[in-house]
Amino acid sequence: MVYYHGNVLETHLFDENFKRTSMNRQYGALVGKLAVTEFQVGKAKVCLIHGNITDMDTDAIVNAANSTLMGGGGVDGAIHRKGGPKILEECKHIRATEWPEGLPTGKAVITSGGNLKAKYVIHTVGPIWRGGNSGEPELLADAYRNSLKLAATKGLETIAFPSISTGAYGYPIEKACQIALKTVKEFLEKEDHIAKVAFVLFSAHDFEVYKKTVKEIFR
Ligand code: AR6
Image (cartoon, rainbow, N blue to C red; front, side):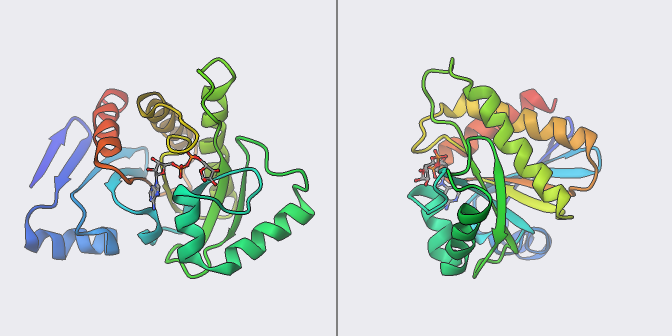
């Protein structure tokens, strides 16, 4: 079933044949998840996916890391577990050469994807939520913007984001989601090298919040 809300194409993957054919070609391993919502910004497609980012076969997936770059829990742990030791080795090299004191909040660096389907992992550090008056919105926007800039600089065309800062770092999902969507929209309006941005939401609740917010921001 396909629905249009303005420029938002909403596709519900309830039909088995549809799942195996057209969505399979577009989203590969991701089918089998509940739903994908897709919309257009300039030449780029932006989609919302309820799923696991480590399954993505985009050029890059983004890791919600911490400044040590040495791994952790949440999406960071999942990426390192599935991607294998090569990613950590490259992170150690980045720490030793570029960022001996740790990667500052809002910055981004890139490693290979190790054993992941994605060719690269872009590691960024989102802000820890401290009530909203400690520069959190700007720093969260920086994390998205710097990840996109790095992808564009490397000539990458497809990139997948998790919901940065909304797990262990405690950023309220409704507020973080607005920033994530606005920052990506503004970036894509100015930059035409990126062809697809996916937001991969792990929980059904986060996916619903993104679906609701996308209709406000992209109406
Ligand atoms: N795919 C997509 N999203 C995921 C996955 C996954 N496999 N696993 C978790 N999420 P978090 P943060 C979602 O805590 O808040 C780490 O320990 C999760 O549901 O991973 O930026 C780092 O090392 C949540 O919505 O990242 C840092 O120390 C979102 O990813 C710290 O946590 C972000 O949750 C960073 O905290």
